Length: 398
Image (cartoon, rainbow, N blue to C red; front, side, top):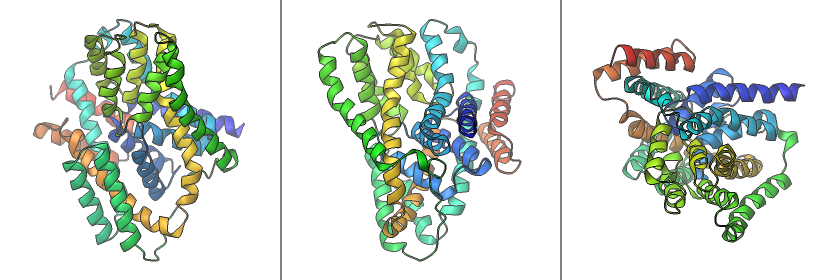
């Protein structure tokens, strides 16, 4: 019964986040930090930074991977699925409805309300960075790593740039952060330790690579089938670094160049995906629903699952090894630098795209500061801050 309660709790919490988490993947990490580090205490600050660093390093949508890992830590394999389902379901339903022609659902939302949601993201990310930096960047070296990481990630805004920042941070930590100071290191898997082992992890990773190798071979024999679509979207979810926005050209080459989706329909759906909460990868459900191969709900589900399946297999497969690796003494020193580098990556993302896409004048800045006040000092729930900022932007700032 306790296990069922944990699974249900995970689903409900992530469903609420899926309904209110506007602003893209970096904002999602801010919402997760507020919910699971600050409020629910499911994971400790340094462990959360470790997890973000790991998911930034792995291919796939980082925010969804963090959510899957948090759900897994809380309630095992089904908990990981429940976290993904709750967080993804609202945006997937909206985009499938949009695919079936219900475009007036988005057309009735005034642009000023949507702009208010972007402003909320500024406050949420700022609050997350502020909280993480106070506990992680506790000396000159780590502060320097964070600032240097922010500069490098801003000057080289690519997956290679992000991975390089993490690697450099780890090297600096290994060399210069060898003091004996004990850092809290709550295990990721403390509530799931009996439900996973290295053998299962190896099996999941074997499935991950097996599908990547053999799906294209099978799909070649059936070029106009759901198997071919599954293969295309599985590879998109496997080969992309840097989050949902980076997958755009890869998906476009798969579905537009093949003639499954017109360029106009592709861009219309991508535009709609920008205006809704939850993961941008839910855009894959829209593409499945309008595909000329097998349009409909079944194809939408298959494409959605195919795009996220690599993240599930990879994260849950890697976690037991990462959990052990981070306990080694040298790795602990490296992680100090990696965590500071993660703060720097969030700082860079805070500027672009979070700040640059939302703050255009003094009114926008004032509303962002007000939202930060509500989150940081009044401890208001995120959903309420989202609602307030949307209403203020739509009714007053328009």
